[in-house]
Length: 95
Image (cartoon, rainbow, N blue to C red; front, top):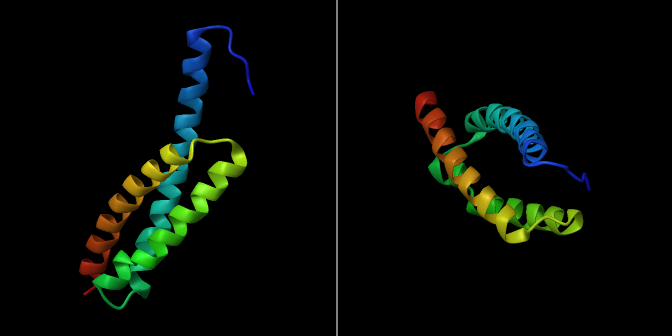
């Protein structure tokens, strides 16, 4: 764990992490858009079984890394919901 000596140092570390997270979300989004072309219908886009698998996987990753599982689950549910909307738009544009 990195020990900070001021609130500014805390905020700088958080800002750096946020930049990395956003870059990774952008990268994830490129793959989500690509996935649309492999789906046959809107149910395949929603892929509820896959959502459950991802949530289970990230909760396990959280547990192994000392992260709060509830926070990780909530973040991923919100992110997946947003990505499903994006993928649905992409899927509709392919028709």
